[in-house]
Image 1 (cartoon, rainbow, N blue to C red):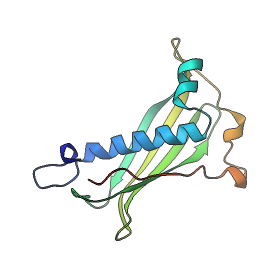
Image 2 (cartoon, rainbow, N blue to C red):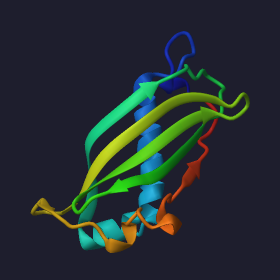
Image 3 (spheres, one colour):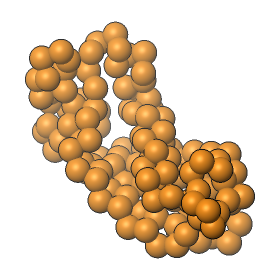
Length: 136
């Protein structure tokens, strides 16, 4: 979108975090935390830390792919990873790693993560979500 770019048509670094937020929402749904379920049970994943490496610039008109997966799970926190690429030339645009926790509202109580999120089992190693936003 034009509002995601600067006067030179380069996608703003903050826009990538929004792309990741959307992909993470889809990934949460695949993990059993869809938006309706979150609202009903009042359980929400919250971002504790974000690390992002910008590799190349995306420009207005580029079509990007965002891939996200569950990377590591502990008792009360988990990590997701994301890759943003430009498929037309297979360019890595950015990589991101986020640490999250699951909390219950309105108390803000930290919750144990569901057992079925265990990524140690090879069959559950990657819950991959691929999302292709509109062209920028």
